[in-house]
Amino acid sequence: MSEQLPSVDLTAASPFVAAMKFEVTEATGTRVAGHVELGPDQHTPWGVVHGGLYCSIVESAASIGASTAVVGHGQFAVGVNNNTDFLRAMTEGRIDVLAEPIQQGRTQQLWQVLLTRADDGKLVARGQVRLQNVKLPGGS
Image (cartoon, rainbow, N blue to C red; front, top):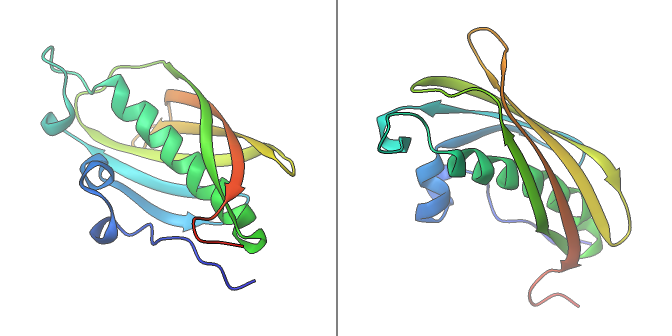
């Protein structure tokens, strides 16, 4: 099937996705990798990076991988549950993102996403996303 997913390039993204500053460096149906530069634009009023940003990165990475896995079947994947744990507060710096599937089924997938500090590899947040495989809009 010749179905294609939208680009994961930030220049082609919605304003919300672009604001996350999630740079995808690898995207396959079994692995998504990338990074995010964190700074004051993503802070809470208390000066640390907002946990909602981590949730959004986790959901985006899992969705990209899960959708890539099923696009050949005329499908994409949408998150139905996102459970993200926040382990370390950050104010700035780079985090690396790695998403891999735990289970990939015909109708649903389960992905784990790790967010680690680039400078020392310590885990900042981890998430698990359950996704539903659905038909691409306009697909047959």
